[in-house]
Length: 192
Image (cartoon, rainbow, N blue to C red; front, side, top):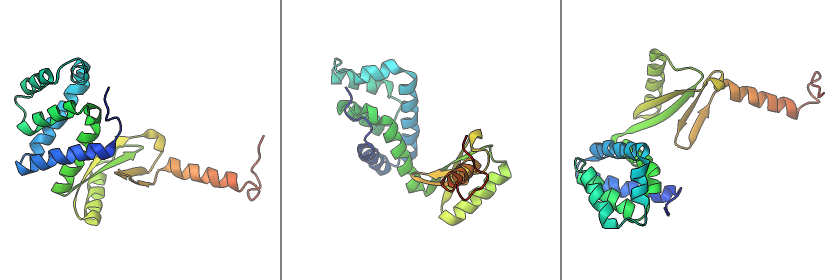
């Protein structure tokens, strides 16, 4: 049974170690691309993941399979996967990938933000928003958009744990909450 379930601090330690090795060898971008490819393989092939997590399969057998499958990958990632499997931390892989991506972006001076809106931004709107954010943040900004019609209007901009919510649904919700708190002040408010 995997021991590494939902431990972001531990995922950061593993990601940081992999990043350090990749940076020393000048392979940060290449290892990130390979890490993403590995993540896709594990998602697409649950039997492979079960094989790697199985306590009944000897570690040496797992290492052979990893090295043969990742033959075209750079050595740091193959070694890293062997370590993760040996330490029974495969359950952390999703978080490790995210943490590695953050470390790579930080080193490259890139801020990645998620923008949710009731509709997708037009090209010129996205360019304007990117320019404003880059000027404010003093770094390159990459915006990942997703459409959430339930927001009704406005947008929600997220970066890590920070969130800026200008959505119409949030504003309406706050207005309804204030009205409920101040029933007496609103003469037409009635409960049936």
